[in-house]
Image (cartoon, rainbow, N blue to C red; front, side, top):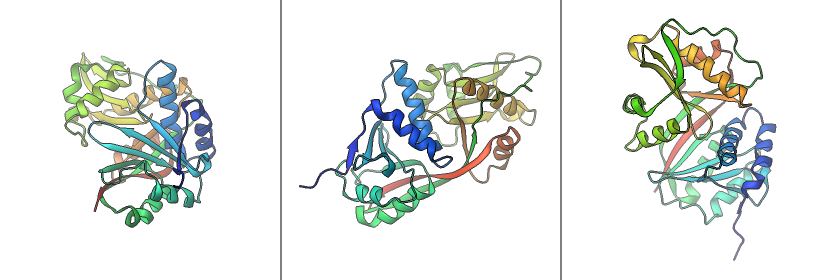
Length: 278
């Protein structure tokens, strides 16, 4: 019997893999951020569901990370090399992936997207949905100095008091997404601007270490609140030695303009792909 091609990578070696993705900049930013965030959680004594494997035990062949949840089967696939042949072979022959399930592959860079389309027939799957995203990153040690809170506005962590508002305004919400937002809020991974104690603008940090659901209430838009919030949250992350990453759909011109105005730079676009068995 042939050896399983996906070899488990112990948590103690995640830092090595993180450095491999750092060397593949900016394509490796998503893989880097996932590992950075999960390692920070572990350092705080938290648990992680993530299980990471490398094709044939070589980090240069890529990462296949299982993040199984009750509601979906998520597999993070990243590769720090233009040559994805060994990763493709591993995905074709592994016994660890149940391709009969509906599989979600988040923030896949172009080299991974291409190999997934290449192996689809071999593993008997088809594309159910595809969501492309532009990537913007802020990778600097310089903090914003030009921030001023408008009169009557305060900046603080989100609480679960506004959980229903946050979840209901997210365009990708699903039956248990409120539980996910509650989890992030309880970690202090949510930030908001409040006007007279009313939440008017907010953003969260996902478990993958990226900005999530940057939103301003309709009647408070075009007043600069999102820019103020973005800069204040970015400063918090930069002080902690983190890279700030934002994804936005290609036709979200307002969000793209906001990130560029704030000094973010474009990185390689990524794609969320949902597969189902044929």
